[in-house]
Length: 142
Length: 77
Image (cartoon, rainbow over all chains, first blue to last red; front, side):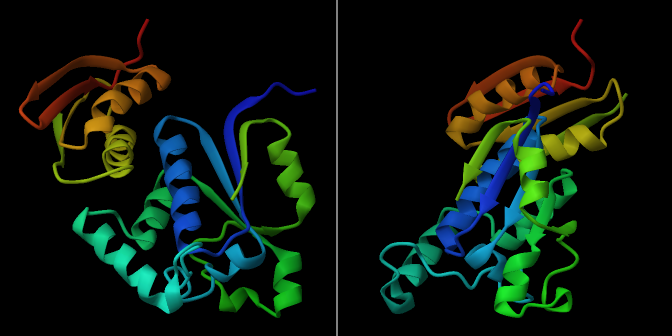
């Protein structure tokens, strides 16, 4: 078996705002520390890659019809937390790879032109994920 | 050899770490990068990243809430 690489592969299954933050913070941190990183966007996570969809996710807890999210966003702004768009741009600049699940696209009727093609490196299935994950030191499902 | 200053004062996780890495990628071999910031954990974590990248940590200074980390883009022997 091939030797494990200094690499992190993360499945972004959730479309919740806070979980997308977790995925991008871990991803950007790993890139900053010299690792390779691939993010696999699937199911609800993939919706965040739709044009205009990045910031649209609800909070995983205490969303309260948007009120909870609004309060968390205000807190984040006060603490100077970077936006998801900025984290995505940093992720790309540091050489991170973004992959979109093609089966989710079929199920949800999403076409490549509906998605942020400026962010997506490739469209793929589970085989690509496993090919990368089997040799990664870190794998996460968020 | 150039000195590059990366000002991350007031920024929080993971921005100081990410900005450090961005500056290191753009720098030429032999350049010195000085990162200034206030985020407490980054003061410990930027040196961890420097070590992981195999680069040279020149020093960490602190005065009040502000820290300064100096890095040389040069492989450690």
